[in-house]
Image: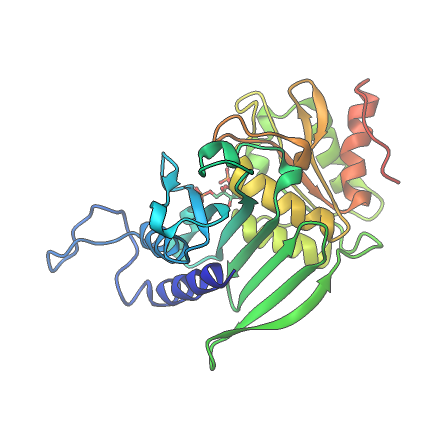
Amino acid sequence: MNAIATSCKLITSAVNRAGIAKLYGLAGEVNSTGDDQKKLDVLSNDMMINALVNSGVCSVLVSEENEEPIIVPADKKGKYCVAFDPLDGSSNIDCNVSVGTIFSVYEVKEGSEGTVEDLLRNGEECVCAGYCAYSSAVELVFTFKGKEVHGFCLDPTIGEFVHTRPKMMMPQDGGKRIYSCNEGNGIHWDKPIKDAIEFYKNSEKPYAARYVGSMVADIHRTLLYGGVYLYPADAKSPKGKLRMLYEGIPMAMIIEQAGGVASTGMFKGKIQRILDLVPDEIHCKCPIIMGGARDVQVVYDQYAKAGIDAPKLL
Ligand code: AFP
């Protein structure tokens, strides 16, 4: 956690200086003075790998930015495996919209030397999950398996994370009526998802639409205000868009441990709990419907109307 917190501070500094230090743009580009320009997410990835490898407590790292897993050299190996997206929402970076880091942590299995198999396991076996939001303030939110969710705000005057949100819980009355999804994908959605979105819009108290397009920002708002976040499977993307190991599972663990619901919606023929999924490869995807019970139930009701076996949450 120290290595992750340090990485988040380093990424904060890079994000804050991105415009001035010319960190925007594509990796591989050459800037006006002929220097190599380093894309912010490549830089964030390098900093996170460096901090985690040198922490001495990790064996295997999986990053959104690296096709292959990173196996930590024997002299620095430890008992944890970390999957992360160093800078999620990268399409938002260049226009200065909130971005974030997401991570999940697993323990190396007994007798294992530390291989990718240590991460390809049931979401329930994740021991720690969290995210850091780089926005008007920097907030680190995490939880350990079976424990409460805690939030820390980076105090820039002392360079430390201060414990500002103990025992975070989603609003238990459902909170604000907000639905959050990329409606541009609506044409590809199945009927129950289309009907659920219509329900939100046309209910007696119509819901507000809010969608940043950075998962960390959208989930942070859902956690604090309530509502529902959806990136469902659809005809174009039957597995959804978001990555299971460093988007789906960690956010599901946080939402569930804060009293919410984290579902795949209809996925591979049935409605599943995200934390019951087992990734079949490190960068695999899963659909996501997560938020408060009141609002996830709306989706389940539409599935039930379509004759699909759907849970009753309320
Ligand atoms: P990028 O890192 O490519 O911007 O993707 C961000 C993301 O993985 C997640 O943070 C967003 O919630 C989601 O994709 C947005 O996807 P759409 O642009 O398809 O709405």
